[in-house]
Length: 121
Image (cartoon, rainbow, N blue to C red; front, side):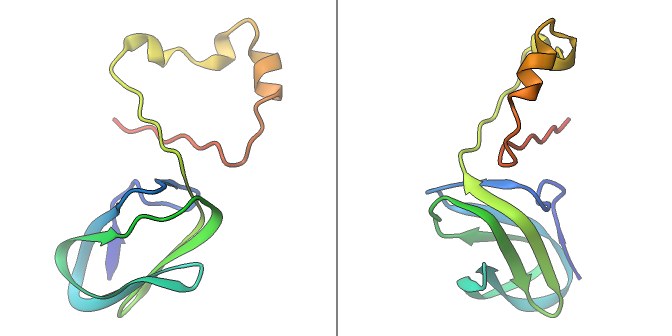
């Protein structure tokens, strides 16, 4: 069974125009193919135990389906390929927008289904 690291989920965003690394584990040695919206982007990669798949750079895309196909299939939906920004290191980044005095107006204007947020600790 293929298990991906927790960061790889439905609704994720991957960085465009850079190699894409996907990692995880499998309990069975297998050869996999990776497809994006049904088109092959990596074929015949052997994985066993802990693995890392390195996909070639991709152009920006929205609402894609990323599939890893081996003895089983892992399918991730609603995947965007675009800009990924990493922010960290400051305690003031813990301030939640909902506590700002202008939060109601700002939140009402910020509805973009392609804006994603992933928090790791």
